[in-house]
Amino acid sequence: VFGHQAAKCLTSGACNLVMGQKTACCLTSGRDNVFLGTYTAHCASGGCDNIAIGSHAGRGLASTCYNVILGRCAGYGCNGSTFSSYDCNVVIGHAAAACARSGSTNVMIGHYTGFCHRSGHGNTQIGCAAGKCNLCGCYNTYLGAATGCQNNNGNYNVAIGNGATLADNSGSCQLVIAYNSSNYWLRGDNSKNIQPGAGIKDCTGVVGSSGQVLQSTGSAIVWANAGGGGG
Image (cartoon, helix red, strand yellow):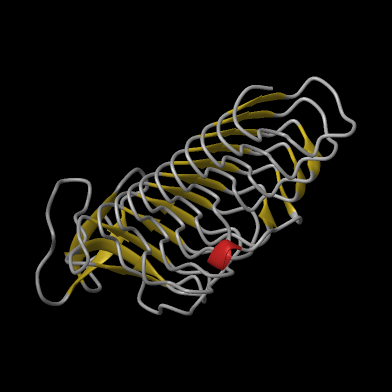
């Protein structure tokens, strides 16, 4: 333990590494934690096997386990509150998951990624501001800068690509693969329907023309005239 008022309340526990001004200053028990940085894990009272590094990182942790929190204000805690039902999360980046209250098995990597996330489980959000406004959704996958950043409480959504935006900001079970917020290659809805952003090319690289249909040759998919057979 090293630093002004670092782990000043510690009465039990073992194998903790605490360094920084007022770092883990509320810690009374716990073991095998690593807390490094000013006010890092400031409110932690117990817990085990947590790693929090960076000024105010994991500030709101109360009694939690198996979290990795790296970056200034990452896992800070909603409005400065504490949270105890928060385990097995990986949070990396400035202000990533800064408004956390609860949740488990989330992976949030990037500047402001999952910033508004308050609860929810099993989310994978990678990229600057990915899933930024996701308040309480579960099992969402957002890959790319600002992907799914407007979806607020949906579940089981998949958004891939820079700025990829889901059709319904409060919906669930949606898919979008895009290269910005208004141009996409593919969308999917909660009925498992898919919608291309433009035409569909067959195995010869042809989009097809008016009146043609996609048909199988037995070994490939090609555009053909309606009723014309597949070969």
